[in-house]
Length: 173
Image (cartoon, rainbow, N blue to C red):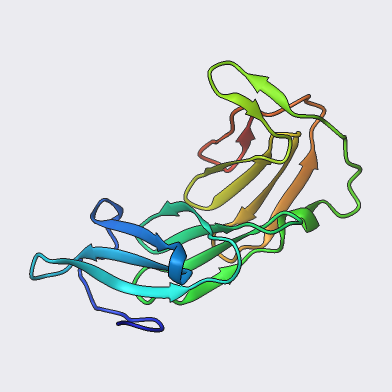
C-alpha cells in the first residue's frame, strides 16, 4: 500500500489527455494516474484530503486544480502535476465578498436540469484566470499564477446559468 505522496519523472505526465484523477472516498485520498514510459497506467502520486471530497476543476500541463468545498464557500487548490505538492490555495470563496453587499436570491428551476441552488458554483478559466460564479449572482476571479483574488462582484442579475472567460480574462455570464 502506498502512503503519502509518491512521484515519478514522466516525460508525458503533463499532457492532460494522458492523465486521470481518481478519488477514493473510503480512504479520503486522490491520485493522479498517468501513462508511464513502459506503457503502464499507474499513479504518479497520491495524497490524502481532509473533510469533504474535493471536486476536480481542471488538469493541464502543469497542475491539477481542485475545488475544496467548505460550509462557508470553499477554496481552489493548485497541485503540481509532477510532484503532487500544493502550489497554492486560494482564500475561501465567501471571503472574496467581504464588504460587498449581498443580494439574496432563491433557488431557480432550469429547463432540463431541475432545480439550481443559489449557492451552486460554475467555474470558467483561461490560461491565467479562473472565475467562480455562484448562481445567486456573485462572481469573482483568481490568478492561476498564485491563487490571489483579482476581483469580486455581486451582479444585478437574478441568477447566473452559464459563465465563460475570454482571451483577456474577462468573465461573461
